[in-house]
Amino acid sequence: MQGCFRDRVLDFIYPARCPVCDDVLPAGMHGICAGCHTYIQYIREPRCMRCGKPLEEDEEFCGDCRDNSRSFEAGRALFVYDGIMQESMARFKYSSRREYGAVYAEELYRHYGSWVKQTGAGMLVPVPVHPARYRRRGYNQAEILARHFGKLSGLPVGTEMIARIKDTRPQKELSAGERKRNLAGAFSVGRQVRELNQIPECVIIMDDIYTTGSTMEACSAVLKETGIRRIYFLCVCIGQGN
Ligand SMILES: [Zn+2]
Ligand SMILES: [Zn+2]
Image 1: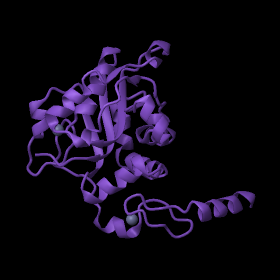
Image 2: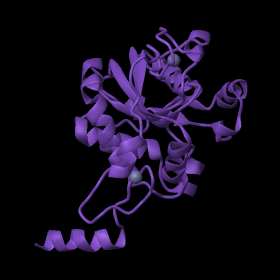
Image 3: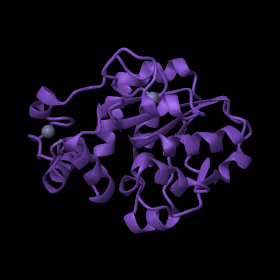
């Protein structure tokens, strides 16, 4: 009974919200609201065989994956990064709506839990933010996603596998070419790698958004240096392919 009362009080102080539209949900409800469910589009086939971006036509790869070398095997995402998801991701990242992470991790697990199992991954690796940024913001949204996904999947979360050594400008302000230059030297092998008894053969990188893939490529290349053989990724949102 005490637990129920505590839940009701917490519901009152921090009501559950739909992560897509941010509306307060009826008491006891949780997840994406019925209204949003009628129009949000989960990504389906055809998609890029490498990064998983949805494609207009049944082609093998998107333009970005055709033009760039990829250190990761493949990736999956839930939604196209369109207007409403841009707002949702901005609140998740900058407006302290960290509770969205639980819902998005559940959705990721529901859609891609078995895909993750098939990869044989032994660890989840969130894309790190620079320590200065972490202190300012108080959390890393990719880590929150990974922690919730870790609870659901039973996979450990390696938060120190990659170190972010350069406080880069936000990628969204930059063109594709600038994004790559911005990230040059931004990541290095993290201290956790030395402390592991065994390097996992395969890992899943987790992040909120995938656009051109330059962040994912930079992180994958660093992880490859550690001897990890296969790298996959999961994101909440991904750009439309071309
Ligand atoms: Zn909603
Ligand atoms: Zn692609």
